[in-house]
Image 1 (cartoon, helix red, strand yellow):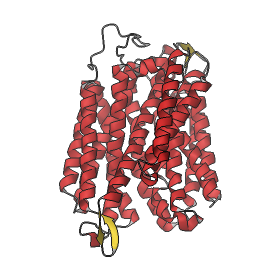
Image 2 (cartoon, rainbow, N blue to C red; image 1 turned 60 degrees about the horizontal axis):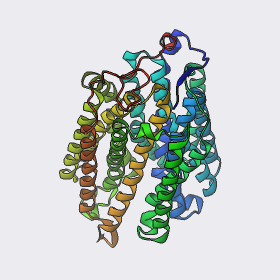
Image 3 (cartoon, one colour; image 1 turned 45 degrees about the vertical axis):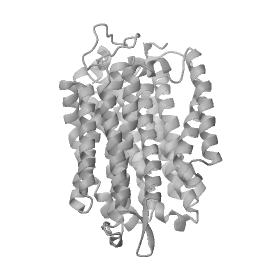
Image 4 (cartoon, rainbow, N blue to C red; image 1 turned 180 degrees about the vertical axis):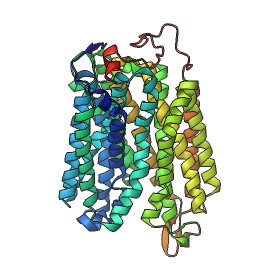
Length: 498
């Protein structure tokens, strides 16, 4: 198993140390924006690049795949070799990917650039881990609440911004802007963020990394492409079967290696396992809100329920939810501090469920659609803030990077599953309106029910978590027998830096 050691770091001055939280949160928001940057552009990619619609879809799929693979891996690498160092590398990769997309209209180059952008998703769990290591105990919860929420905030803000750029400027402009933001992030981290003093021992698990990559790519490819290939096609079933085989071999190897890329024994603890299941379900429920809102309001009025809104208007419908997530981050931290993150997660899942109930009955009015979407976003903000706190209560301090990376991965898997379900429902529950095939209103209502069911399942998972009260035998490095730990204060040296 791993243990914590100290490594030399250069602390910032007192004035700069106060900027660590906003700088890391800004980095997380930029990375989250990158994940949804091309969504408004997708319908136009074939005419802009000469590529097929299937190839254009890979601009989203490839970021999901690389994000899923690199997030837990880079979290583990950060635990071993320095979180700030890996954070800088991730931001460098994001900037390079943005430049590639900005200078080319070739679909192959664009997909390569988007793959690099997706790999930078690891910035968010790395930032959470740095905050735990560097901040005094009383600032940890509100800071990680803000950092974790950037995944939702960036997605909600990124869609309308990208839509505005797509409609009013050359589409390469948004990639130049993302490259500039990535470079700014790099400079700010170099100037403000200290290197974490916490390290875990052991060798890098290269074979385990390859096995994890094969497992994730196989599963996510089957999920994201299954609708197009056919869920019972040979490719889909073959990928799933191969993924199961790789997963079994990988799991056996990880349990036997002394320094695994993912500590399955820690991941199997109820406090960690149930938190990750809840993260998957919350990710599913949140993503349905974003996907369906944008498409629902754009449906033509000939459908009888559509509002015929523009891309920009559909994106702006998500903006109040993004702003609400920013405002609720400090409140969610106070809820976790007062009642425990388990209670906060359960309450958040309940709010998301109620939000979809509102959406189910108010799908004809723009303002009520926005209100329902905002309620779901409010629940998401509280949930995303509580999840890393639950993870860090249950794992050793030297494994926070990899553990938060896995939790972020589970949210991404939930989003991938949601995308597949939404596409399948909207493609199958259709009717002919004004000579064109379109989803029926019942298709959207069915998605709301499925998303509400996912939120309810997350509520059940949260109620099954161990009590928020720390166990009597908890220690700073975690209860090796499987108990929970409280969010621990940093070392005296680290506290002095903050």
